[in-house]
Amino acid sequence: MKKITPELTWHESWQSSYQYDLLEIYKETSFPRYLGYVYAYAYRRKHILDLIKKVAKPGAKVLDVAAAQGNFSLSLAEIGYEVTWNDMREELADYVKLKWEYGNINYIAGDVFTLGFDSEFDVVLIAEIIEHVAHPDEFIKNIAKMVKPGGHIVMSTPNGEYFQNNLPKFSECSDPSQFEVIQFQPNSDGHIFLLHLDEVESLAQQTNLSIVETRLFSNTLTNGYLKLGTLLDLLPSNWIDNLENFTNKTPLFLQRKLHTSMVVLFSRCN
Image (cartoon, rainbow, N blue to C red; front, top):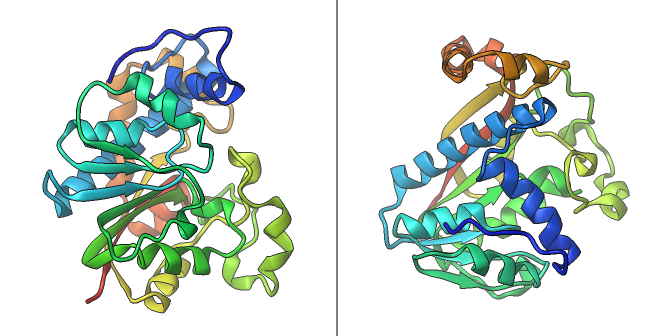
């Protein structure tokens, strides 16, 4: 992936994307308040790529939905997958192309549900999206239609059972349509529902999907929550990684409360 230099003439969405790249790709750590994001993204990236490699060999067709600045798209293309980048913001495709170095990647902008993808992909990646939609059940059903029988969906999303979460539970909302006017907003301000593990299981059952594996990760310290970002700047990175590894091995009931994020691997039934 090429390193790029920002320009004053860039589109506003390019400038915003570059700010994320500073953290996600270039790991800019000059500001302690953002270190939690750097660590959390690194763990998310590791788990997502690991699960995709676990179920699909290089050459498999992967769709990256709402891929924004395309860091997963580019990484997957570089390790040999045939990737389709998708985002509703068409202008971001040219931003991603600036960073492209090698690998097979197609760019298809627009609403992914109107593009006619039908049982086309071996893997569909939905990273940090489902928490921004008013109807996560309908969303996952429509995503499942794009996966080949026997193919997989990899989903990352914040963990609704994290002890500081105070957003409503989707399964307890009688009228999710009330949130339609605010859906698809970026960043954490746009979160509507944060799914609980039992809700993920229910969504899978409703959608002819089976859950292959679920991983909870990124604890309060590694995410820099509770004003711990400054502490991250003081601790050696191997200490932080060791703490993350330790909490990953705690009993599930503790992980549900301690970890801020999850990655779920689904398989589409034949």
